[in-house]
Image (cartoon, rainbow, N blue to C red; front, side):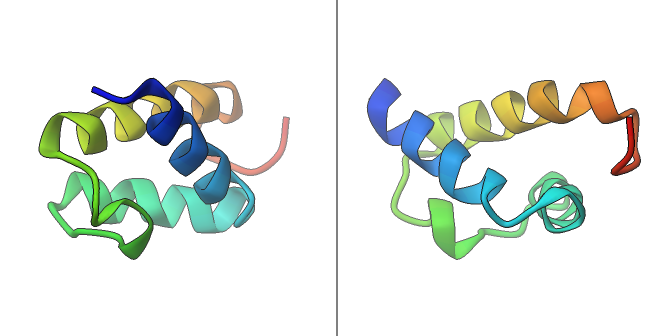
Length: 65
């Protein structure tokens, strides 16, 4: 597993903004393969998803604190 590639993809996805990131989380949870992570191995994609969920946990499902 390449930690730098994972970190780069997390950063790329986060740059899309809060609402887009929630939508991406839902899409990934539903098994959709996002272009931003398409070249990653399945375990790396799972790690990206875990990390963005962890980041977004502070927002508790919304885009306001």
